[in-house]
Length: 162
Image 1 (cartoon, rainbow, N blue to C red):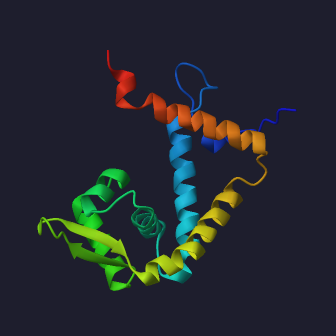
Image 2: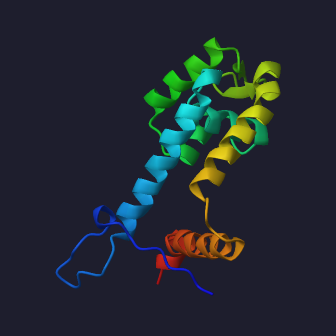
């Protein structure tokens, strides 16, 4: 059985083409905003924001090592990233280390306090996501992941060459 949820009027957007066409970009942006707002609220007791959690996660997983890596990954400007890293350093979750071979390079490392807190932060983030996916079947979640993955793939530069 395929369930179909009715889209609330405030999430629909009429276009000249058809009143039934939804603004997919608007819905994705609103879903992202709702997720981040919920995550920020749930991480407040830890003294962190969702953006700060994401930075800690990237550093701990090794997907970023420098502020420049994080700026590329997170699409932040360097000033915003520097301020966020300053706050994480003040809280004792991140430390900066000069490169041994090139002193101009500053590597970012999670501290033992940051690493110790990550499992609780991950659990909190998972609970937020589960709340937003409440009522979705496993098949619907798989389908959503498939569609979002296709959108991401379609937006890759290699798909626009030629």
